[in-house]
Length: 118
Image 1 (spheres, rainbow, N blue to C red):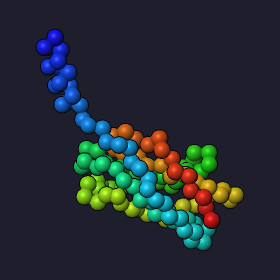
Image 2 (cartoon, rainbow, N blue to C red):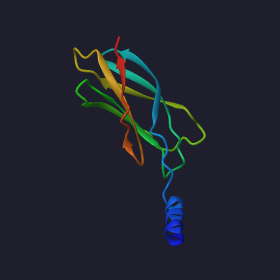
Image 3 (cartoon, one colour):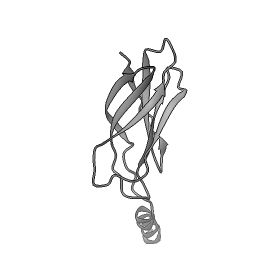
């Protein structure tokens, strides 16, 4: 029994702590002619290069990606943070898109935020 407890304790220390998925706190949308700009604010417990929010994307109503903003580095000391993506082409007739964030360990988050277009 002691051996089993020791193994479980060692596994607990060897397994990396899971951070919460990236949370989308705010989305600002601006139309610039035929193209759109998205300013997305995200919070994630970035721990460094080993685990950080590394992208977010704009999805059409069918879940097809319309644009992706890759994040080039962790934001350990900058939480929450806002990054922009310009030049997104939205198909005619689409009145709502969704935003989905990703982290470098767990991939695309299950949370999807719906954003109405003006």
